[in-house]
Image 1 (tube, rainbow, N blue to C red):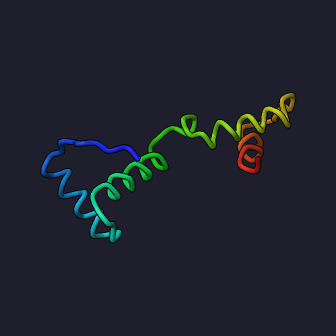
Image 2 (image 1 turned 90 degrees about the horizontal axis):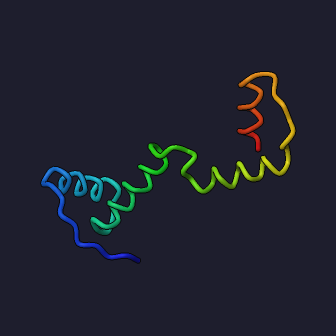
Image 3 (image 1 turned 120 degrees about the horizontal axis):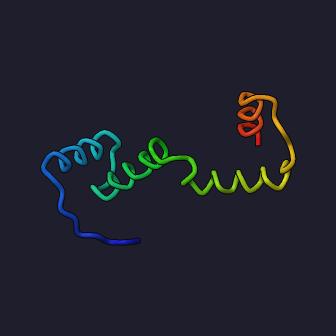
Length: 81
């Protein structure tokens, strides 16, 4: 586990306290971890997620020469991979 000493604004501190209370978290570190996980899930581009890279590699191995007639077909294929 990494330890860090950080400076945050009063507003950010209040937000962390709200998250801590809302999700019954042990401390502000848990609130920061929750925020980081939610940020990753909601805001990071899928290309940056390790699961996305693994999925693309699996697709490349199984269907490298396949062509698709439209974007809907490609999307269905990717979602079912």
